[in-house]
Length: 377
Image (cartoon, rainbow, N blue to C red; front, side, top):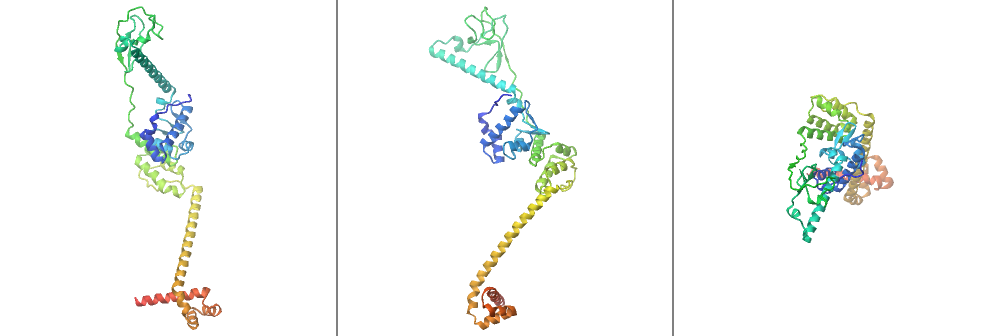
């Protein structure tokens, strides 16, 4: 394969590139670079656009962008096959034949530009010929083979520009001498227009959307979708199963293999929560460990919040009832401690209204104040 590929200058303005950039939250420049990487792979490894062995996951890893393959499928720039992927319309631009056509078109365009410049120079020098001014063609001599000359309008004619003849009457590149007068005129034949690519049918669009969804879920083998559709399920039913996997089953120990089996053995009318295989023990263990770790984090946060609330209440209690406690005589402080317990009274006699004893006495004063307020209310 040639070591070059055609690359449109206006690719960044293509609506499909803009959509892919929006879906992936990347710039159009990054998307163009990823497309260049993909088309370069196709240029190296295929003539018909089918790259065997390249999976969706491998392609996303190749361009370092998860979801890139699914975004291409959504705009009809990639088809996921069993055992590989396909670049649609690859032979239109990147095959050897397409590149030859592109080079030939450039050569002809350069030739027409060169001839036009020659005519313009002759006109400026005042040496232009009637044939140049009128834009006429000198016919091929009668009796000679009719070499064809494509014109700018896309037709094939037996007439050729004057510049195609030498002074000896020999037509350039034809090898045919001529001695007959150049008076005959040959008819022109209009080339048929190139065939138009038919628009994708509604069924094809729905199938591509479905394959993109299952590929995004991690399933590479599309036989499971074919089995589900053959069993009587609709595209909407398959989308519902995939959505249930993403939102529910995926978090219960199921992996892409489980989704593949669920679609393969799908039945019409089967509830979404039924028909799933046994969860993968490894995935289930990992998810269980993740849930436990998350619960531990929540427990630590709750304990910290509880301690902070206790400290805040303690400071508020000290600010409100600390002066009240300090103003009480020793006899009343002792009686207050005795009302709580004999052990607290003993501790008060040892250390006074400090430490744990002070905390308990302030709590008693707070409760009494709350009780008085309740009675007043």
